[in-house]
Amino acid sequence: MDRWLGKVAVVTGASVGIGEAIVKKLVGHGMKVVGCARNEEKLKQIASEINGKGQGEMFPFKCDVKEETQILEMFKFVKQSLGSCHVLVNNAGLGHRASLLSGKTEQWKEMLDVNVLGLSICTREAIQLMKATNVDDGHVININSMSGHRVSGMIFYSATKFAVTALTEGTRKELREIDSQIRVTAISPGVVETEFAYRVYPDDPDRATTRYASMECLKPDDIADSVLFALQAPPHMDVNDIYIRPTQQKS
Image (cartoon, rainbow, N blue to C red):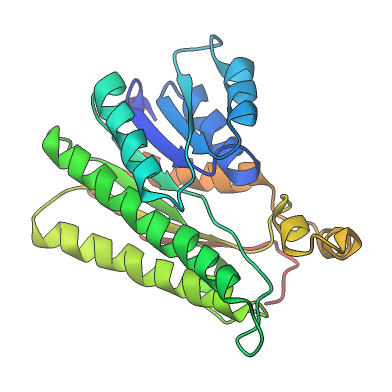
């Protein structure tokens, strides 16, 4: 990770779970990390815990990736305060149990806005900033899902994650067409013990607890370590896809 010392990373969905773990790992390796999420208080709490303990630093930034204007403001802050962006981790994502036959349109739209459009806008802005500041060895990492490779019980959610699979490869191809060395990686976790299931089942927390108790789940740090693995690959190696499941997971 020495090549990333002092470089700038942007991590979305940084206030909890996988995003929080990624921020802490990158700061621990000496990076300047803009961690964004809607919960500004939690972001500031994380920053107070980790800043001043090494060469890295976290910069909390309140941003709802459903809102393009807020994303643009965040990248304006990155450019004005930190100069450029070298790494983008598109971690923000959400899922609803919204059936194709009876689901609520607003829930479908929210999943599209966060999982697909928010990711795409952040990617566009990060790469444009990299190009404008002559960063040609940057890295875009999309936190996808195993549901982006096989249809889960949450079908519309799966559809948005299938889109992430296509967008990741499409971004790689467009970068190669302009002879850019910016690399692109998708990391697709299986079951990770986070707040995700509790948000999927807000009225039935016992169901989420049972889900996580059914196997030895992945931990947020496992996914954060996968981010480090991709970032540490030598310049000639572009790690495109990482699938990571709990050993006990069947699907």
